[in-house]
Image (cartoon, rainbow over all chains, first blue to last red):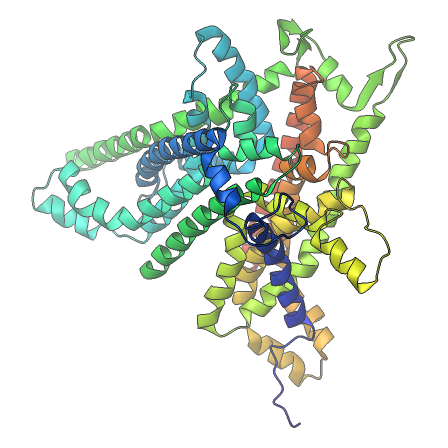
Length: 266
Length: 308
């Protein structure tokens, strides 16, 4: 045999893999490319221009929707990360106790139910509460987002905690540190990368949500994704591509940061 | 001695109580804004429908559940199967299965390719899989819409190559929905497959070749059986969100080709039949939970097999 026989190779697999990567990126690249189209169409190319970015940035509705998305994501990520950190501290580094499995199942529940099901269930409950209380602000969206962000924030924090032993905390306690001081000076600094990762995941998940937001929002409470969903029914101009491109960049930036954060740890 | 034991027990009990207090906020939020509403929805499914949406509170009725599969003729009260619903159920199952098969056919070689790269390159390839996964699902669906529309890239390329004479209408068909779901859920297939293949012991493959197995035989008799847990995990992870898909069929199906998610929405919108919507939702949830349970059971069993 002239060439060395590679036991790992399978004929055609590399080709299919390249085809898959091509498939994964072709639509995204097309979408981004047409955001820079000078013409009014998302099908005919008429030269490079930034006009759609300018028009999106000057669109009041888009501005408000973007701001609303960020506010909801900031609240939901902060609350869910705090709750998830506490829950992670309560469910790791211990002998199994009664109710531990129950807690795992409970915390991961939002991951297991189809989003559309949770969405209509929330619609049923919140629409009635809206009638009873007369309040129809962003609180409902923040509550709903917080709930489904908790399992995402919980995962990296729990993973980080499981790799930490109790030696340092015991040493601090031996040196008469109060439990709170031990937590602030020992546990929290070591846990921080996990918390940051959890926060970023929760933020992206909240920012991306379409289905639950679509059903829970009151009139005039569009977030960026639900605004885009509404626009897709009409005649689409490259403005949608421009908005999507900015959104895409934001997600990619956060995920890239997450990737490097996790890599440094390993 | 007895008192030392006693105080240890008290300390442990206090520790457990503190752990419950610590986890309380997360549990309460999920109870109020996720699990609780599901139970209320279950109750709603057994109530009579209101005239303008909502329900007649406290009025028990099985009509919601009845109409999931059956319909009553408005004139002569004869009962027949609800064809419209069955069509949608069947479409959801068929498209989800097709999506699972296509993602497996594309995902298996891709995961294998990544798993056989040098160690330091694998992370980059994996990262390329995760990037589309973390970008907004709606944006990815929209991107797919642009590719398959009549004036889109796909038709333009096919026309230029002379494969077709006039653009093929893909958008707003079942095929479009399947393309969209394959596109958005593909990473969910590749990632668990990769996790299984990374651990693949290539000495077994080598042994296969030493015993005069061909490439195909090695694939079929050694590689596929060893990564079976990954195949099952990936298939379930793709099948479940496909079955409950809402955004993709709404955007790519054009409002005609409904899947279960859209049928549920319809009952809470124009249909004004909340009990029926609730009943379909619970049916969908039970199917998904059952699939997950089967998966967890089989994962636990293969785990035990590997250890034993």
